[in-house]
Image (cartoon, rainbow, N blue to C red; front, side, top):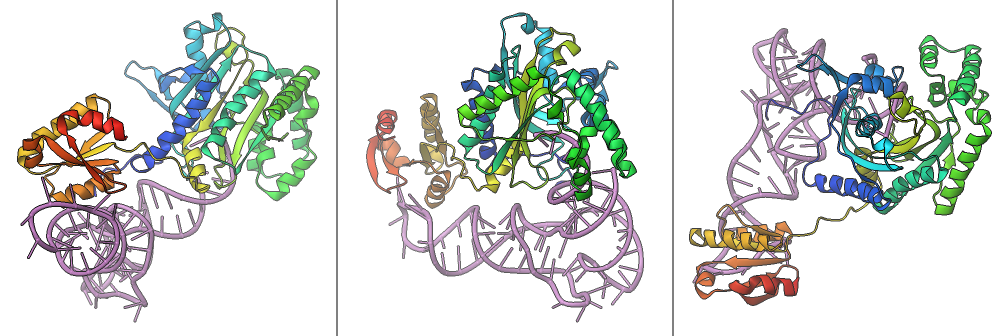
Length: 418
RNA sequence: GUGGUCGUAGCUCAGCUGGUAGAGCAUCCGGUUGUGGUCCGGAAUGUCGCGGGUUCGAGCCCCGUCGAUCACCCCA
């Protein structure tokens, strides 16, 4: 065993599992593309200040989970802990916020959070996300939610639920938080809990302890503080979701970890994952762009956890599709035909066929075994006889039947039977 | 970050009250001269996570450390 190990808490995907990871990610992305979202490719590190201002100093993510370092020029750099702030920065920097609206983009890649690792919680993890910027319509909220839900359904996931709520506008939040703090102040709770509440009083709604849950049962509910406009917006979102045939439950005590959320907020929770059950979440962020120096546009987006969604598929024992098989596997017999064999493979590959070769100077039996393992649809044994005659037997690996083909026209013969 | 559990061949694991390691699967080779999947035979493989300690002797005991995992916390 090598003395080197992957850094603590990172997830890695390699064959066979990597093809499942790839399939999950592509399915998520495809859903976004079908709704008109376009790729935005961003750096994995940004100015530390961007996250401090965007995500919020008081959040756990910013206050204790960021990978922050000084670069060679003395700048404070942070590995992105989430995607939205970077997208906003880029959109503002390249003046997309002054062009035609909405801006609809998707991204995919690694994110970094220095937490204690657990199954489904990694220090480097993968997200696919989308952002729709510059629209107030509640219909776009529903679209964003539907992009995620559609992808989950396409993967075959069933054992999950969508929770939605409305966090209201800044004014709502201010008056609500004030009342909630007042209420919490009357509670008999331990010091650690009180400190958590001081940072973000909503956190107490998420407490797992029975006593705390009971205490919070009679706490004021944010939903009661919504302005008429916010309430109407939220109602319309629900109307759309129902019309789309998307099931949801209203969770009026949902807690989101990022400060910028306003209005519609949502979470997808999978029931088969243990403690790290959130497979995706997002919401609307009204003040974020202005806060970061851009136009005062609203936006809505989500981040989906690719690692956890793969775990969810595995928990539900979903058979993810196999990668399309090799079309031909060539077994060369002996040193003298090796060059001809690899050249034939190369020629076919240039033509767009998926071809592999039994390398490693295996005997015929080993070569055929390799052909079998490869999952190729056809196998072709290439020995000195075949080279001399210019013909060979093309063997169908499923049926075991073989037919004679001429090497020069192999490409056409293959296309006929594939 | 806090607490618990675990760490033996590529994988899944066994290893009795301490006497320097095994099984199944996978891999490779072969079962008469050039065709795979079954079956049979054979081979290779581990500094028992790492570092200390106790002991005549440790995979088994103790301490530390690294990693995974579970819960808290947090969230994707």
